[in-house]
Figure (cartoon, rainbow, N blue to C red):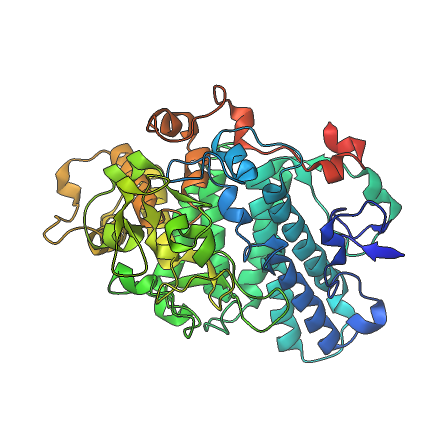
Length: 494
């Protein structure tokens, strides 16, 4: 019996023999005939199928802990040195294999989302319905495709660039595209999304115009660094981030008064106003709950799995204040008896920000995976303005200070142009503030890569943390493509 698989980037049909668990997933949104996509409901269904690639609890996407594992090469998060964490350790020790199930889960989920988005993009002109509604659906599809390719090229570099929504034999021999080619598509897609999507904040998990602008700013910031090093993009990043900042109220974004409020993690709440874009998890469906909270981030003493926790020197260097208090859990125990982290089994602090309200011990919860917060936009502007034409202005200082002062101890002095920081020094202040603000939020790794500081950050690890197996080189900035694809298409080995 033939089944649709996302392992082949385009929806290639394989026989059931030898197929992985991925083949048994719901195929909604993968392959649609022209008759289905000629209706507005059919187009909406294809869009829903695209979202499913990003939101499957145990198989792929970002409700799955795999995306957290894939960024362990940074200096903020580590994993258990033994136990059943071999796949996790490969990232932390820069020894990622082609069969690593954690990286494969992100890869497969993104390509599943891309295929669903391609179905919409390639067929919407045949759809009969309300133009305004169809335009929004198309804008979302372009956003999802850009979002997915952005994750793919940052993790894997040279990747297959698939624009088809249906299978053809040509896809068996598709070649890898360069990051430049991938980024060209990402930028073009986000510009369509920026045009088509509405201003108002929408149902949780649906992007708006502000989401598209914010991701475009982030993409420009990344393009300015490694591997493209197109430094002219700093000005574009600053300008686009400023558009979001100047219209934050219109887009429904705001910086919450306290850092702790961002991570209350109340399953009864659909999210916060800091979320620029989130992937929502829901209990009650099939594979729709979120597994990135609870067990995966809790210590064994509390019924957790010890999947990920703080690196020691990162924790020690973290500036005191309400943000540190809300970020880390330093005593373990759900009852009256508490164990300090120094006496725990792993002898590491954990990340409080991923505990569920009430310290619920579970791996299935109705909480979102927030893929970008409004402080990202503020710090994108501050850093890009510093590295771009003219250096940091007062608005850049204001943007950084909003994030910095919220997180730090009372009495912390605001940074000011009169402090004498050079543009480069100010930019470094922003990068470091991003490390503290977005600790264990899948941000630090990408900052280190684009700034070519992976080696430097890992050289500062505590001797009691996992160490790279061998000297880090630029080739380690990207993962090898999954064996499930390279074994079928030899062109992907070139």
